Length: 178
Image (tube, rainbow, N blue to C red; front, side, top):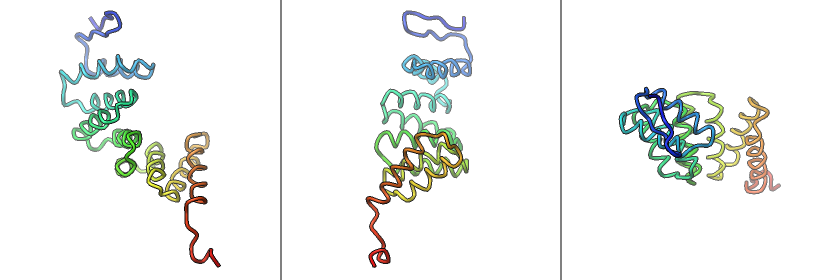
């Protein structure tokens, strides 16, 4: 038996971990995040060292707004697989959502160290720099994103916010005061 539905709960029996994670990810993409979370937790009961299950659980609980739990799950995933740039970037996103831009910047930079040019991590780095008031750095990173992906509307919005913030909040240099 691959699976059965009981009410709104998913029963999981006699399926490979890969099949379970694939189904849970599909459910998560459909917006059925709580059902996906249940499957991820079931996988982790039988395979507590499965880094991808921890990673996906972290993204699921993050979508549910449980940032501290998301951060803990993603950190557990990275303890098991520290060379995963996607997990590092998702940790950066979770830190941003939790309001901790300095730790988000560290995680985004680690993702970029592992995968130079990783566009989503550049975007996360830009958001973290902006959150820290480092508007010039944020502007440069957002610009990298829109140059590589001109249709990235969030990056365009970030670029304009960062450029405007540079104008509003950056002190003029002594040379500019002449």
